[in-house]
Length: 239
Image 1: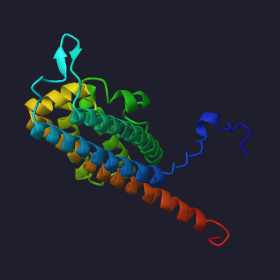
Image 2 (image 1 turned 45 degrees about the horizontal axis):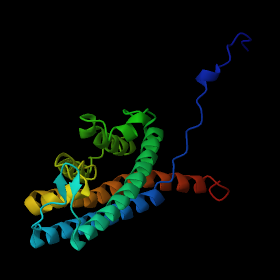
Image 3 (image 1 turned 30 degrees about the horizontal axis):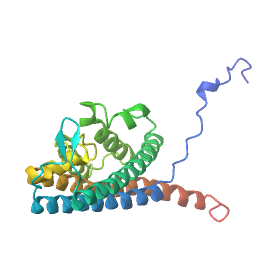
């Protein structure tokens, strides 16, 4: 027996592997909210069609310039309400999507044993920092899938979803548009087809997003279900 054997240092002892976080529940909620956001945005589009068909009042657009606003028509008032409901739905959907993305990214780190390419800061800032928001959010989703299922092809829905999202974003009337409701009303009177094309991209992105969430969730759920079955087999009955 060698009395001079150096005992292993604490750093040499591997720590416990973090448990995978449950993803099925938040995935289902996110899918439902994405679908609801798509319906809310479709309602906006219907109201914009109504505005275009009705035509601009003789008094001109709601914003008359130099801080002057004329009284809104009943249809314009109802568009404000529909827009507020859509914005609230989109905000709740965004929160759920970020919670889901945080969960799948943590699970991907556990499964791959590697830190994520984009640190926690980018999970939120990557959506709003100009230029970076053109690829980082997609990269986080793609990395989560590939780290969870190495060797598997990235679902086509990821690229479809991201392309549609960018169309809605760049067009200026997506989920992060800069115009207020009165400006959108004026655009519905003057250029409805551009507005509706952008709305269609946002609605389609919400639909494609449901397939993205389901695909990444399913990949990770396979690992979670496998861990559960392994744990049951290692119990008294399995022993």
